[in-house]
Length: 285
Image 1 (cartoon, rainbow, N blue to C red):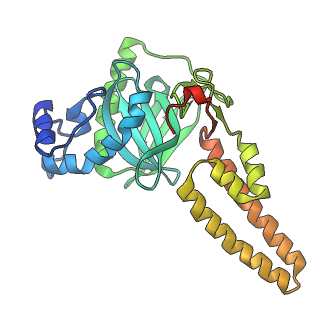
Image 2: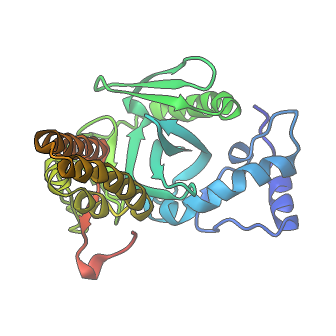
Image 3: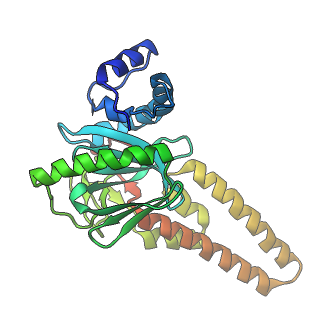
């Protein structure tokens, strides 16, 4: 990894008419670190859109004096996930198809990371102290090479300072409204009063009628796609019913709804999905 001095990056951003939020403390040299084969302009052109897309969330999620060291886009369990390293912790943001951060959100203090394991090609595994692990099935090679030294330096400093906050689990859920930590198996944020869907509640709604569960997740694009697939499958249910194969039609209907219900349940188990925000405390999403 080649860390670039902050001044050339600031000058190049100005030259390209690109601006970063002055309210966020970036370590520009590591955020826009570059390989020898790439120019500074290429690195900024590649990394800036993702960094900029994260800013609305970072403005809410970062602690006072917390510094952003690294931002990249990986794929965690086949879900595009933004990884942010700060001087205190690792932040993980789910993302939509346009690489814009979207719920659920998580935070991992460096004291909760047991080991980083580069696997092969573009895979990466992070072992956590509560016994869980994060396996990225996609982690860009260049970002993976930069990730290790940036993480190691930040984790060493945190260890030297003795920062080891109490947690309910290694990968803590963050409220998608105010970004306070929400303890494990808790579905209401004490800080802002936002409530979140319990996985079983969403699964039951989806089993009864799929669109209820999907639209409750507030993912409109995903909802439309999945509902179209669902309606396509229902077409076959109606077809078999019309052909007189009632039992097969019922079996297909139950199997389809159960499959989508199971998918919704697994999505909800990954992290907190917003259900309701007190009107007076609405902030994000």
